[in-house]
Image 1 (cartoon, helix red, strand yellow):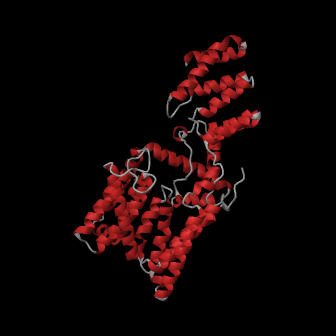
Image 2 (tube, helix red, strand yellow):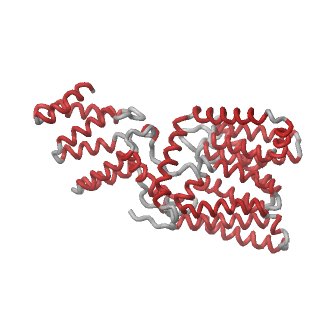
Image 3 (cartoon, rainbow, N blue to C red):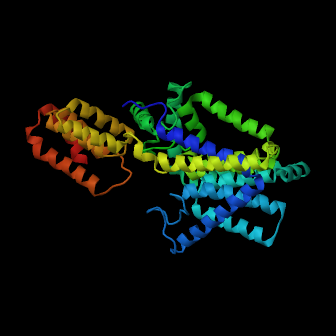
Length: 442
């Protein structure tokens, strides 16, 4: 399946975010940014606590608390940035109101149960109080090894809190390195990660069938690391350009304290996918523009207001006319285990057995613990009279580790056992001797 290097959604998203950056440069200074994000974070905190109390409906069937985001992980990222803005206001002027807000936002961050959001908040807080921390460490040098030990314990605790989730991310990063190695200079094109990733994951498990990551594999649409995503989609030059842009932003900004929300967002990007969610993606140009507000202060206020107004109109038109609010509606088929099984079944019904077999095999490697691809392979081999292949596949199905045992998997295994015992009398002696012991055991 051919995928265009540039796709419509990616281009208009970039244009929309550029408009936000221009507006922010013109009218949003750091103080306004902090008020805007603190207010938004407070509103989301009210929604989160309302969802906890079952007063406000959640936006996800599996998670009781999501705020106005689609899942709690995204909420955690937004709340981390909002908390840093509020913490900065509290440092500037500590009042009972700001202290209560910091505690309220911290509580909503806790409700999100987002480890990435927690790390982002801690890092951003350390940046805000960096000068104070430096002074303390200079005066009490014994605290440095203590801090390092606490950090190591904290990281270890985060891993064991949900080790399966961490291992799943490690798998995605490992497979993504193969993608980068294949196209280090050009990448696969902005927004094209999900169109290629699962095929690479299938190739990885085909060559590493005993990998410890087999049990955590699943369909993947995001790399859970913005910097790996940049390297995959735009090549290593794209990653270098982004890092250089962040450095220049830091180097030439007249208010480096304004970098605090960006620090939290950039750290969050190490473990999540903020650029794929428009609200979170907007935080980058909004914060970057606020950092450069003082740099464009020489431009007359009227000119900046006119520029911001025109840009706002353009951005609204881009959002409403382009479909970036629903980016999946214009996408072609993304490779997943289920999609490849469906395509294989369609090909099999049309009589293209060899092509169907390839799709089933690829699907079985995509997620080694998913039983459906091997079940479809088993049925295909039976219908084609390939007894040896059918028995090999049946043996794999009955011995494979499964993430979830449900009625479908139980029915499949029972069907295979019944098929074997009903037809064992018609088997050739060679096939019978090869498989009788195994089927008797299972």
